[in-house]
Every structure is written in C-alpha cells, then in structure tokens.
Length: 174
Image (cartoon, rainbow, N blue to C red):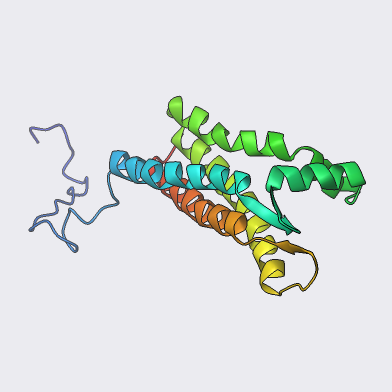
C-alpha cells in the first residue's frame, strides 16, 4: 500500500453526509462557546449573590438588616455554636470568597472555576433557600424575615450554578 498501511489493517471509518443533528456535526458545543455561556451566566449570578447579601434579610421593628448585620448580631449574642458559630463569624469572608471562581477563570482554569462556582452557588442557594423556607412560613412577631435579600441571592445562586456547570462542560481537562 502507498500510505504505509498493511492489507490486514481495518479500513478507517469515514463519515459522510450533511451536517446536522445526525451527521458529523452532531458533536458537543465548541469549548469556547460553552465557556462564554458559563461566563455570561455566572457573572450576573455573582453580582446578584453579592447584591442579595447587602439587601435586607431581617425586619426588626422599622429597621431592615442585611445578612452582614444579622450575622454580626448572631455572633455577638452567641446564638450559633460549633460549626454554625464559625460560619456566622466567617460570613464576610465567605461572601468575599464568591469572587474566587472569577480569579481562577482569569487564569483560564475553566473546570476549576466551574467547580468552585457550583460549590459556592450551592452554599449561597442553600442559605437563601433555607431563609426563604422559614420566611414563607410566616411570623407574627416583631422580628421577621424580609424576602428581598434571600430571593435575590437565590436567583443569583441558580445563575452561578448554571454558569459553573457550563464551565465544567467547556473543557475536558483543565
């Protein structure tokens, strides 16, 4: 044979046909496009998570308190013990860590950024979802939950998770 193959070698499979959902063009989306989708979903999600953290979470009389004010009061009163107390005390640092996937993505480590976005999105979504769950149950007391902050954070967390999943699918290795 001219190309150096032996007569016993199997013939290569050549796909022919029009591009379409059943032809050769039916492959996964291009990595660059999927990464762009992840970024376009993740950045608004990140912004909504951070804005939701600063919006009111609790109404005490006529005063509306953000998640940071609530965490500060809970820390000073010693309401949470153990892991809960540690999380309450570290809440400002946890909110700052939501920028970590953006920094990792700046180094083009898309899958790592996607993993961090999904992980942090689940954390924010779990917190906001729990607050909404208890807030929707209703309370007739003077201190009650304001649904603004948790609902904005939950929306941002869902977008952040969707962006993280798109980044995880964008590149097979990094």
